[in-house]
Amino acid sequence: MARRCIVCNVLITEGRLKILAHTRTCVEHSTTSAYAARPVHTGTSADDAMQDIAIIKDPKAAAEFDRLRDLKL
Image 1 (cartoon, rainbow, N blue to C red):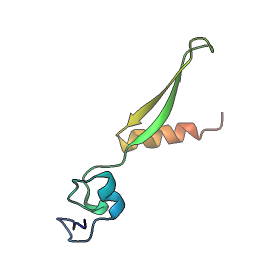
Image 2 (image 1 turned 180 degrees about the vertical axis):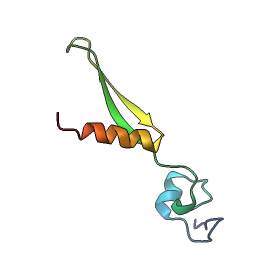
Image 3 (image 1 turned 90 degrees about the vertical axis):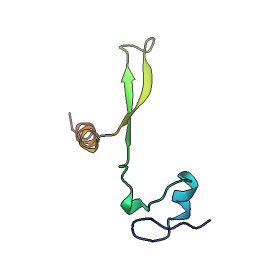
Image 4 (image 1 turned 45 degrees about the horizontal axis):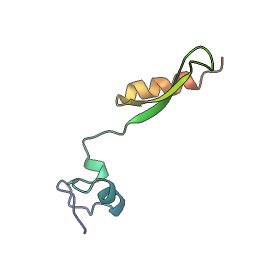
């Protein structure tokens, strides 16, 4: 079912409505910023190694992770 943004009256895309069925705004007027995910590896050997995913909500922190990842050591 088509729905229009309550801010600008533009049709909300089908994909956005499929993922966020109750959204009332288009992407441009969303107040939620995108999250970033980064892998986290812990442990000092193969026997105690663990992998996890960290969800990063702060855009500045995500940018810093990207900067550190791209460093040539």
